[in-house]
Amino acid sequence: MSSPDYDIKVSPATIKTSLNQSQIKCYQTPIKPVLDKFTREERYQFALKYLKKLREWWRNVCFSDEAYFNIGEYCYHSTVWRHKGEKYLPGNVKLIEKHPKSFMAWG
Image (tube, rainbow, N blue to C red; front, side, top):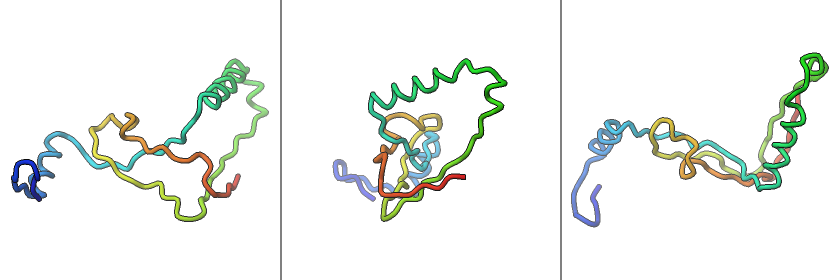
């Protein structure tokens, strides 16, 4: 490897050592859907609606899970070099399309 500005040759091992000393590691980017202002407000109001419900009320609630299965070549995986604790800084998050072609299963 060489730097085009200074014509300095640096080995991959030197770069790896420098990154390790700086405690910078390669992580998979977290995935975060793009939410517009309206959707954020809608979710906030939903949470407020159920915030003060009593324990007895929650006993009648059945929780379920859901999973998306994307169709096609929609790739979520990418990596970023960052310090520990910087997971959700804007440059370290991959924003995705909220509704790619997919189907959902509930259980």
